[in-house]
Length: 333
Ligand code: 5GP
Ligand code: MN
Image (tube, rainbow, N blue to C red; front, side, top):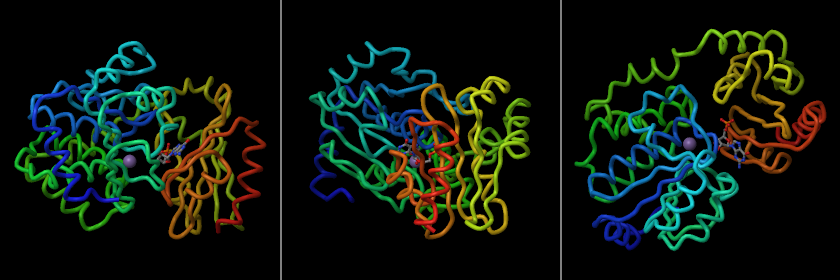
């Protein structure tokens, strides 16, 4: 769903004068969620708005390098402050998520807010909980869409290295360093960001070469002791147990990227990465080509996402979740 000329002109009027703006993204924010939120913040600051970026939960340490990240309000830590921000907001931007259940308890705060609500997102099946929907499932990332959004507002002259650093981050993380989900615009946007001074080499280094020893050892453990390959289905599963969480002191972000290793095997087209948490089993799915793990996550694991990258959760035992995955997978091959 693109924005119409009329909608764009209404949004232009909305942001022309200083207002209270809230920017919210999904729980367990990734590089795209954080980058799009901060990039939009830096852009809107040029119009002197009073802007708050709200994160439902804390962000991975990897993204500590992002300027302004320390100013984000984390709902889990500051619930009352968050409620006030939404109550007083004139405009709410919802970035990188398609449904209110992706922001948990913040959902009702958004629903009840009197603000004008604008969704910018690239996930499948956006839900109609906003006044303006800018949805592009062909975009590599929400960060790429923020760049296009700035273009559509006729304000690309406001792009600078600060906005660029944030937006380039999400493009790198959501495309796995330009390995998937790219389209011609992705490269054009990347080129324009580099032109305004983004140091992409340093970003790649900060994103991918800052693992701790513990994280690398956890990866080794996951591959050696927790991976099951099902050649008949062209699939692989890695499942981490509660005990693993204890033994490796696994914290938020420590398991990032592990799922991708499964797809590095020749002939493997589907990857499932399961994490046994105190009350639920969280899942990440990845696939190649026409196999839709979005449909699989949506149909069986209360989840969703993109065709080739999705996630979900189940209130069940880890073994049962693995069995359910194996039994439903053939339908999607
Ligand atoms: P990841 O595996 O990196 O956590 O998530 C991959 C993709 O799936 C992301 O685009 C994310 O938004 C989506 N996703 C992950 N978990 C869930 C979930 O529980 N529900 C829905 N609807 N989408 C999810
Ligand atoms: Mn994204």
